[in-house]
Image 1 (cartoon, rainbow, N blue to C red):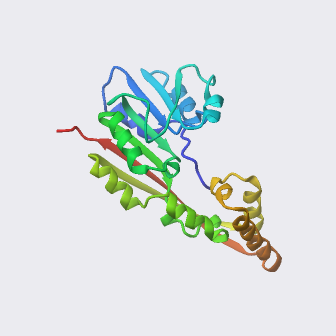
Image 2: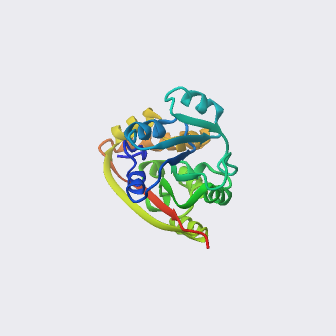
Image 3: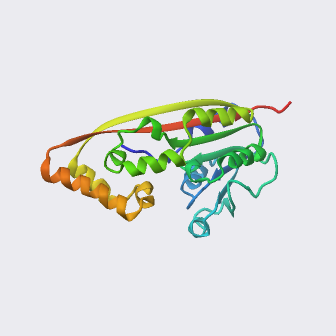
Length: 240
């Protein structure tokens, strides 16, 4: 059920292009990782005049990204100190990344600096405050405590963006599913959840023990799991 915001076609970029008229668009994927988002978008927007850029703090991930698509320019850098000139980009994408930035206010200042007037920032993320019954938080409550510190609340995110002259539209997609215990175990074994790698060994083993205890005493038990996707589309107003 959990999605990762890896759109085949980014609808918010598509809408932005449809509603603007530029001879050339400069696009940035902030915290681009191995370049999956950029590769998908550059392929699907091949008829548009686009300059594709990705920046990430991990040389290892950038090494994997380089060479996958010749039309994408990757640079090493940090969200808090972007290696670009003022008002360079029309669109900045930030999918499943904001929680990793240490100095979030400074990162938003930098996005504001490199965006053109009427440019767009799109932030795609989960919203832990709206998904306290997620199966991971159910069995690993220590994970919720970590995410509570890593993520901003919706209210704070919107307020910080508005303080920087962004016009913000926030969309929340809430999903609920019922999981059997074997399904929970299968997801644990898949190890596709970064938050579980952040837990220390003791807290991880405590969570696994909770799952195993349920399997032993209530093998037919089901878990109602909720998962929330938040998309924040922020258009930068013209400075006066």
